[in-house]
Structures are given as C-alpha cells and as structure tokens.
Length: 419
Image 1 (cartoon, rainbow, N blue to C red):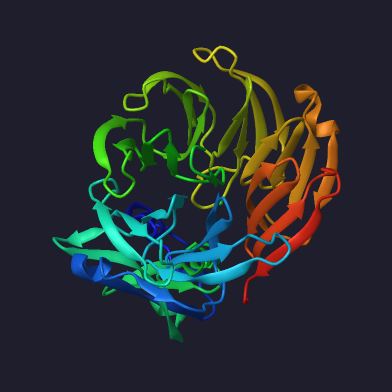
Image 2: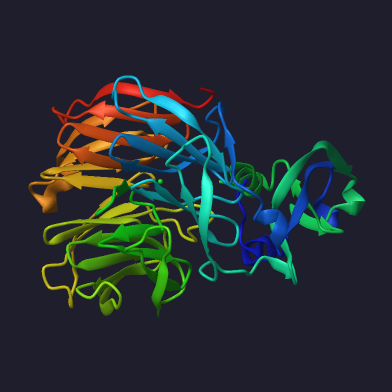
C-alpha cells in the first residue's frame, strides 16, 4: 500500500459535486480506514520470507546476476537471474513503505516510510540492517509527534447514504475516508494501487543513484549526497536544494539529469560531492522520467492523478550545450512511462499499449520510425542491459527479452503477478 501526500488527500476532500436538489438516488461509498503507526512500529526488524508471490510490482534494479523487484509499499523480491530463461526467486525482504531500491556488492539501499535503510544480504536468508540514513525523506504525513499516517485500508463493508445526506464524491467522517464508488473511481484506484551505473542499473523512474562511490537520493525538493566508499557506512556530504516536484535521477558521464514535474534540471557532477546547477529545460507540469545518450535527452511526459496535467508526449532535447538545452522535437504519445535508449534504438513503455520500439537514428522523425511493438503488457519501466537483453516491469509482472533483433523482441522469461 502506498502513501499519498496529505496535500493530495486534502485537495480531493474539497471536491464539490451536485447539490441536494440534483441528487435523486442513493450513493454507495467504499470506506477507507486510516492506518497510523509510530516511528518504532515503522522501523521494525526486517523480515525474510522464503516464498511470496508477486502481487503489485513497482520499481526494479539490475545488478550482475541479481534482480530486485519492489513490491509496492511492502518490500523487495530477490531474483537469481543466472539463467535468463529461468530466473529463480530467492526470497522476499519485507520492508514497510518501500518503493525505491538499489544494490551494490551485497548491500541493498531501500527506502521506508521515513528513512533509507542499508541491508547486508551476503546471507540472503538472514538480511541484516547495518545502517539507517535519517532525514532524507519528507515527514509531512506526521499527524502528531511520533505518529504517522502511512496509508489507508479498504474496509469490507459499503456505506449507503440517502440523497438528503449526500456530501459529494469524497469526504471524511472521524478520519475515515469515504469515496463514491462511481464518482470517485480515480481516487479509489490510486489508494488501492498504492500505487519503474557504477554498481548496477535502475529503471528510469528511480529516485536513487549509486555512482562513483556516491549515493544520491532525491525527495520532492532536495538532492541528498553521501560518500559510500564503505557501502555499509554512508557519510553525509551535502544536500542540494532544488525546485519542488523532482521525481527521477539519471547520472550520465559527469552530469546528473533530474526529472521534475515542471522540467529537466541539469547538474555538472564533475565533483560528485558538490553537483553544480547548469540549466533547466522547462515544460508543462507532467510526470517526467529522462534518459540521456550522447548529446540528446529523451523525456516522457504523461498525465495521471499524480501528474497534474493532460499531456502525453515524448520530447527530444538537444543537450550538446548543457547551459542551453533546446527542444529538438516533440511527439504525441498514448501514456508514456519509463524508457531506455541504446544505440539507435529507443524502448518506450506505453502503459496499457505495452512496449514500443523506435529507430532514433533520425531524432526529428521518430514518429515515422516505430519498428517494433510488444502488446498485451501494461508496461511501467524498462532497462536495456546490453544489445541483447532488455528487462521490463509492468502491472502484470517482470519480463526479459532477447533484443538481438530490436524490431522483434523475443521473450526469454517472466515472473508474472501471482507467481
């Protein structure tokens, strides 16, 4: 289960609807009970589970022969990928509130509701928390000192209100959140979904990066930087304040490209402990992962409740002059999410339209050069590991493809939801 910002909850509570005079029927409401936890309860011991099915996949991470798959809000599946045709689930580490993950050597970096924890998995069946990084995640869901709102639980019964008592599609009574089954469907689905280089490879939706003995974590407005020469004992070096709404981080060469809901921010990272702001490529508010290759950045913009807009497009940005990024081309898309680029090929996740493959040799004609399409997958994010291997995470599971022929990706294996 995923936490949604209190600001969001407050905003939906202010939605108005028809007046009592217009209300001519009864309205059924699904009730969501708030879940509160203390700091001690949130930071309980990490638990290893021998066998757990994949239910709600989120972000993922590739490192050597291991794959980490986030179970949204609940923890991490660890997969042995030595045989690409038959990945083996080694187990599950329960981590409340987890969404972002990275791995180097035998240390997992994972966020919780409050902190970043470092877990030694040298013995995978006995994971050990060796350090906790405090103060890098916003605490705005703290409803009172030491007591946090960590999510909502859907109760089994349905409340029915007469027209005279109608209060709108979304409202609260004594901390309980009521959502009209019809009028508040989008909000209800969000609450239910709660709910993606020197060490390994993350998808384009990540908020974490391990790069040249440095660990970077971005929250909504700050980049936190740690020295992880000793992976088990990070040393806080710096924090860089940015505009509100930063979402993703992509290290490339000696630069950092930060995706935000209002643009792409570029930092010179020649000194990894002290990134220097260079410029911003601004765009309309939208969710914004970014990947970079050579002198071009590829940015997807999409709509959705958390993205605050109705734009669905792919922007190609010339970053040959990092001080003056320029829009080279823009292409309408269906609902683009994560993406990955390798050579002359762009792999783009298009939600319920699956994975689309584009020839990008002519970046100003990408819309004319779709060369492949994998359908029947709700695609979130993708990692091109090498010219022959592509990893994909989606609403229905994890997939691996042979991409020796990019126009016709051949599925090697999968771990589906329910497995």
